[in-house]
Amino acid sequence: MENLKEKLGRIESWWKGEWKGRPLFKKTLPFRHNDLSSVFDVRWENEKEIPDFRSCVTLSRYREKISYLGEAYPFAPHVWGARGTPEVMAAYMGGNVVFREDTVWVEPIAGNLEDFPMEFREDNHWVRMSRSLMERQLEEWDGTYLVSLPVFGDALTCFSLMRGAENLIFDMVEKPGAVLDKILEFTEAWKNAHKYFHRMYSSILPGDSDWLIWAPGKLCTCECDFSTMISPAMFEKFVVYELELMKEYSEYFIWHLDGYEEVRHLDILLGLPYIKAIQVAPPPAGKPPCASDRWLPVIRKITESGRMAYVYANNPGEFEILAKKLPAERLFIDGGVPGESEEEAFSFIENLMKNI
Image (cartoon, rainbow, N blue to C red; front, side):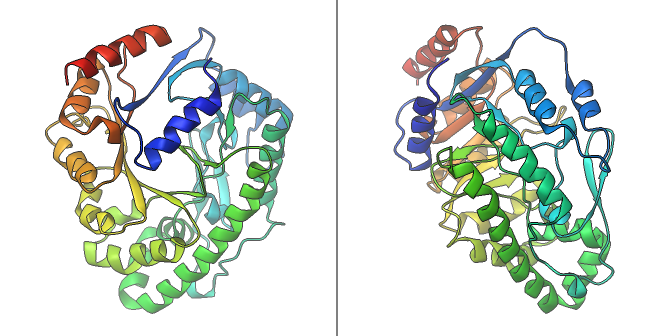
């Protein structure tokens, strides 16, 4: 496999707007082996037990044993079983964690948001679980993969988990000042959580890495799934307020645009100079893909603003449309490249670029 350092060098150039030529791309080729997801969950069966982290990490690395082409790279994800994690700040601040069959949930606990302490405590049970997981991942590091930091989450989505979405809406309308105060407390706790885990990560690994992408400095893959429930005016009042509090701490921001309902907030996001990239989350099956007439104008607006775009292709035809109709050097395309080897994948890319 190509040297990890070389891949990260190209991703760094992309972040900085210095990459030229073809789009960055990710393609993974799985080896033929049984799906281990169900076995992985058995190793951490429920939220009340403390698992054998060595077994979990060893199994995770085997499960990730695939070929990585282009700018794809192996990484050890921060997951509690194969279910993933919640927005972990809700758990780190005392939320009641529940393992469901295919997800991890945090049940509402805050009867009054104003009375709920927004603080990061190292002695929290779920902080200790995350630390144990990362310690084991880093102990087994052999130079060929990255380790992902936890998915910390954003203020409003975490508040909606702890408070309940409907209750949070009422809070935002009836006592917006109290919600803004809590967002300020949340961002301080977020920074403390990131510092805590990034110290572990950076003792061995370069830059910063999460579930989506690597960056050469402190990374914030920012999102707000809750934003589909609010107007652009409320988005600017609450979400942008949180981002402004983060801009001096994080060095690389990529916004996770999760569905067409969030496009109404795009102009606001593009007005924030520190957001360097926008990820258009993969549209679900049956919905128009990134290479469709629905999404191409959105992605074009992103690239014309000087931002990078992280997008998805389901097949070579979609990859070709994206590369031909958008500035190739600003794209990071996940999927769509044909071939069963590095040579075949790059042959497709080279032939495509000759005709652009």
